[in-house]
Length: 406
Image (cartoon, rainbow, N blue to C red; front, side):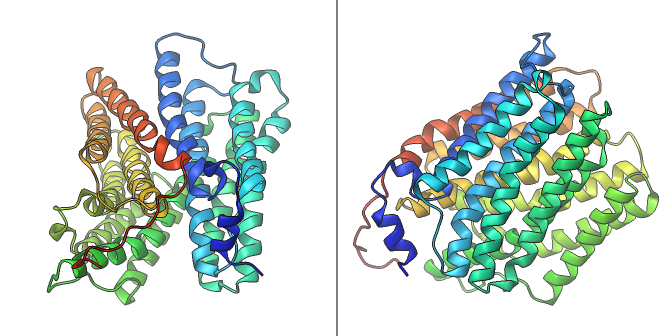
């Protein structure tokens, strides 16, 4: 059996099909910007794409299932070969999987002209195929410790199916259980995977600089307890989103994850935005839990939509940008350093999240929403522009170390 590296070297087609992160990260960045432009146009009176979804439902679906679905595919198709030691998906099979994602976006966009079953089957086909590929690799590599990741992908897919079912029945899926289930799965994935990579990458960076104090090792007893608390709070939020017990559970989970994050020494990483942004992205996991808990117990604090965006635009938006910018540099053979333009992307994403929160706190004020959308478009349009050559060109040749750094 050939190794992963041999399989990638054997591919002599377009570089963008040489590894899973390349097409999916690029498509995710482009779609994040384009979908926001379309959303603004829909809000200003333009009819928008001929979708059967109401405008709010289309907006929610395409950012959670469209954008995040692509990011998850890019990350998992890159990480699973490292976890299992097996072959990555490359070449035309990778192109076919990317084509399934594109078909889903097209089907949802023109769903007014298609049967609901065709739209749902086309859109869900991508996630089902992704899960099938990952199941095969995890089982063949006997990498059972990562079954929870696969399980959460299954829950995410179930959420998408329920979203389509509610849309087809004439309901309001953006306020329905499908979106809640999928968002809960996404937040739990950040808690699980972020809990591995944030302290690990931080430790590596601090060790290179001879730091005396290092992050707490990942997935110790406190980490497991905080993840159980988050899981319980998310289940309560999906089952009874307005109940006082849910609000209390979210506040407890938020406090525990603030403590968890504090153990990872993010305060010592300000010299490298590529590391700091991982901590900033994870910070929105507890902030989202605290915001939703406060809104449940004291309605009108921020507005439920604004509080929920602490998870959707904050935890998901900033953490995915953090992971994508870092992973693309590392796997493309580029230095693991955030240049000024890359750091500017992080600032723009933060501005977008903060402005969206202000929009909830200042009902009737339009400027926070305009600022949030503009910053989002600039952030993801900038990502696509900066990372286009990184994602579409062959991996840079490794340079010999000049001494000192590992």
